[in-house]
Image (cartoon, rainbow, N blue to C red; front, side, top):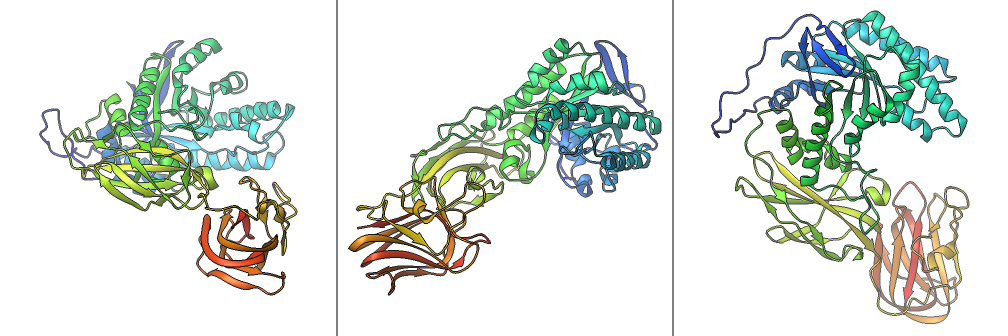
Length: 562
């Protein structure tokens, strides 16, 4: 974005931002003042942190600094500092910005007993502080990220408290080492809750200031600081809209993601609460100046794939920046028909008309997320037909579970509005009676160990979509049901788990030994296969000759319909 220009409120476009002179030598950065009246100073001048967390590769820093400066950003924050950090520091300095240099400390490390890890990490931190302390892009050092809170994810009982104390004590050791090498830049430490600050207060006294990542609860930080009786200022190192862990669930039982407008307002409110704690909160780095267009990127990035969102402009307004005047389309409402019961592979409708404040023509795109189906964070293309302005007929995924569908509205000027809703994909209704239900079922093998095991053959004919049969991890495998007597079969439904058959045959038999193939494929893709057949037999089986994954074969349900 090194050719971005800015527009004044008059709508005229002045010359592009001029490159500032490149400073030389280290800045002197200090926390000055006293209780409740602190400020951060750079070379003796006040510096309120108006920041963004840094997402792109450091090697691309020059492509983004002009844009950040146009936003009004003066600081970027990283989570790690190493041999790749120099381009970011140099580019930030060239545009008059500074960097909060993070040092990652492993969240699952044993800070009580792992002396080797602590020694090696301390030596590495000392190396990089020595390397970069005179770079004019350095604002401060930030040791660790969310370690105290996440000890509860790795330890239990009394060991949680022991690890937290040991960690805070270790951070103090790191802080002292950094101060000895570089007395001209402050040192802080970030955690995910203000509940970490009592540990810092008692065991990490040499921190120059505290830091916290806080999203939906950021407006509580001021009162937490007051209640804690703290004697040091703080910065907020991640904030913005409410996170996945803070919002209520929707009707399908998954977190209800904020709308673009709610997201915009979340960033505005966060900055107001931080900047409103004058003399104590020294600023914030909002989350996130990133370009990923995936589940987390849509939730938190202000510019996924460089498309600017309402949240981008909210941050720019809060920081007094001058971005382009043209702003994104706004999707004021979004609905999904039958969102609680969409047949796998069937069609449903989405309504999400966008309005553009600048009168720009709007182009739409739709995407899927399987985050709540299989944990995947990437987005998938959607097969859809646009039927009107913001109205679409959409083909549902074949795989069962709760999906998210996203509507993107582009304005042709580098902006995007994005809204998302969930839909529950269920097995299609099949005409007739499921004569396999509860009948004796056998298989070539079944998985007897592992999370949730065993997975016997009978699970595939119990009528429940939360149980499954799973085979050994080899080819071929088969699953068969005994209908008790020769029966005319019209439909077969295969409800695959994520481990599915790519090449398989549906076969019938009167005696269980001589089989006739009534359906065959070599290009199965999983999900739910509802097959029309015309056959009869006492036994029906699915014979898988090639797996679709590295795992075995797995079926939630094997339905045979007369």
